[in-house]
Image 1 (cartoon, rainbow, N blue to C red):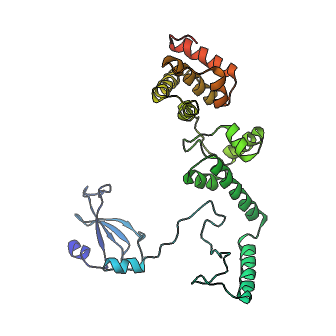
Image 2 (cartoon, one colour; image 1 turned 135 degrees about the horizontal axis):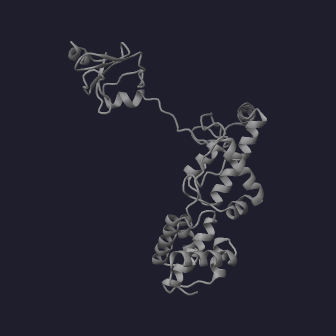
Length: 296
């Protein structure tokens, strides 16, 4: 009887659920009866769950053409837009569907429509602030060369989320791109981290190596060696509490000398945005703790 019921078109659907098992007989042939809202075992007939939800469409299609016509999928949500991209947009071109200019009377009507559309869409001070913030976020992210997914994540949290995504940027870079003092950015960062309860991982210094190495015109072998030095330091717990940019710079400074592509402390410091004293201190620590045979 169960087998017949499972084959009734439009009534039930049989699902070979590999992850789900029957608690009674251990069978894996689970049947979803959407008409009765039940989840039952196809082997012993046990009703496993009742009042289940049908997450599929409410319509049926018998071929690909019907499926294409009946599907109702809109554009994806975009957090970089004030209304997540789900609001109607009225362009500024004042042209009809054929590309011809519309009459002055129609233009005046469209102007009024745009004005009220904007007022309705951005009615509160919070919404206005969001529009300004998203525009600034887009400008800064574009200036830093960050991808679209980082912009979306940052817009969702209303914070700089580069570190969570593994694409860190220094305070100097963000300060320069945004025109805001580092102290102010740091204060906002700590506030957002606490208020949003965001678990921001510590930045791995090796993430800065490719960027610094490219600026210093160092080869791939130097980059690989610098990353190895950093990984050894991480395993030994040598860089806890140390600035990641300083550690990355010192590792590159050492690796460049090991492969005959030596750069001066000043050159490395300028690229990394740290002082020469920082590089000297990190260099001495790495040399001593890792037992490196290198003289600079």
